[in-house]
Amino acid sequence: MNSTFKQYLQYACKAVVGVVFCVSAILKLVSIESFEIYVFSFQFFGLPLSYIAARIIICLELIIGAALLLNIYKRQVYIAALSLLTAFTFFLLYVHFFRGNDENCHCFGELLQLNPLYSIVKNAALVALVLVSRNAAPFGFAREKITGIVLSAVVFASIFIISPPDNWLTFDTAEYNETALNEAFANNVLDENDFRNGNTIVCFYGAGCRYCDLANKKMEVILQNYPGIVPDIVGVFWGTNENYTTFIENSKVPFSKTILISPAPFLKITNGIMPVLLVIKDGKVVNTLKYRSIDENVFLQVYGSGEMRVVE
Image 1 (cartoon, rainbow, N blue to C red):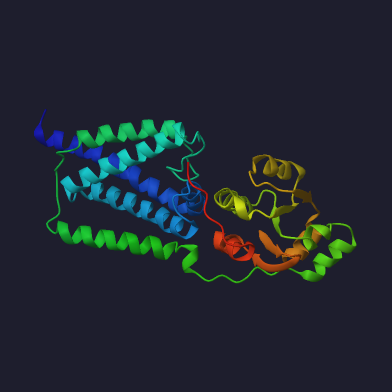
Image 2: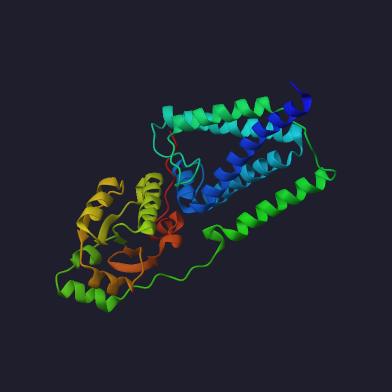
């Protein structure tokens, strides 16, 4: 085989891996909220660190993918690509065999959903392509060092500027309409006892609302991590019966009660915002949360300190 043709064939294999890394990173970034919660669900970190860990993974994938395409730092990137693919593969084996989780592994965000086993096969194919492309050198950069430094800096800066972690930002408090809530009590749309007795988190969700679903998944993980602070959880929904039923069936939040109400009172109470969570202690609303302000520390502060559940 002609040596030049062989070099370009090897580079083509390398480029395929580079494109897959870049596409994987971009699709994770597009659905960053879901990826954050996926990282958080393994209980390796609290929510703030999970935000950062999710973005670091995206940055590493994008840098390695771009470096493969640019054919720079050949030996270092070769090792980095194999190491990252190996780490991902062992993690997926852990997810499948020890966690028993065969749902979307978020390798390509939410657009292309793969379960862990399919993703392991994909990783094995990418490893084979990396090994084949080890000596690919049809071209190079004269200023390889500065190119690598600039690439890394631009990627990290861009990711954290385009999508800063929620805990780096300040969000307005979710406001609810207390007058509309009292009207709902008076008209028997809602039961006042659910709001006035003891410690309760009341979740106002739109059935079929993406951010309501994500908020509920955040709550699932927080309640799994801190089982000692679980108050009563009441779900107040609006939407179609079908979406409401699907939401409840898929939810792992231990609702003590759920109710589907008509849109008008729901939207009046929440001022048209979804989701809204009322954090109630001793019958009084002490905090109101939107999706991005949901954090385990809020509940620990309100309902008392607790130790994070040990990961088994």
